[in-house]
Length: 152
Length: 152
Image (cartoon, rainbow over all chains, first blue to last red; front, side, top):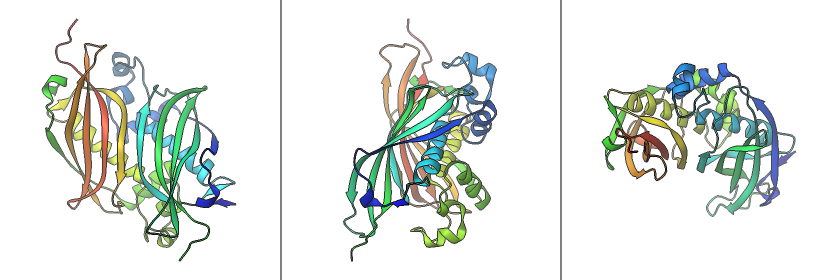
């Protein structure tokens, strides 16, 4: 079953399953996209403000998108997501460390029908990432969602 | 030479070198972090609003961070970046396609000294991503930058 624009209600919330990130994944990701010493080098990380090796915040964001897509958008009650316009209010509250298990909570924050295109609407999702119950990241995404009954 | 908080001036701009992204990288990234049909399946992508396979916007963001870090933060006149607080105003203006060559332009937008910690200041960077001169993505990042002369 797919949820279209009309099927989403402001205030609806969804919690994903979990994903545990390894030290190898943290280093591999950072070497590709964010090769700063505190993400790729344990000795250098001890001298950083983090005091230990931590995941790139970008990696935390990517893992949260993965959970949002696989468990929510492509889940049993999926969402007819057509694409994304952008994101706002990305904040990293706590670093993610090797072995941490992440979960994502997503809430429908706002709905705006498209004025120019009858086949879609815009949906803002507030997404928060949690490790052991503590919020480590938060973000608002602006998505494009297909309507069930496109008007001419 | 490293540029500390004091060495950055609002209005300073920097342009990175380039990075060309392949179809294989686009699909590989999307399979890991954003496995939506229009990022991993050419036939499905033709039926999507994009009309062809396009990179995940998250991939465009990751590639732009890579260029920002390797060419600017870790470049010849590097930046004493201690970490990131968050990002705002992420907008995808145009999709990135296989074979596209990306460049990043970064501008120092705002500087705020830390009130509680004498060893650092906060610097906002406006970053834009360009393909063949056209802006495909823009974002504002909030970074923590070390001061050259920490006051007690």
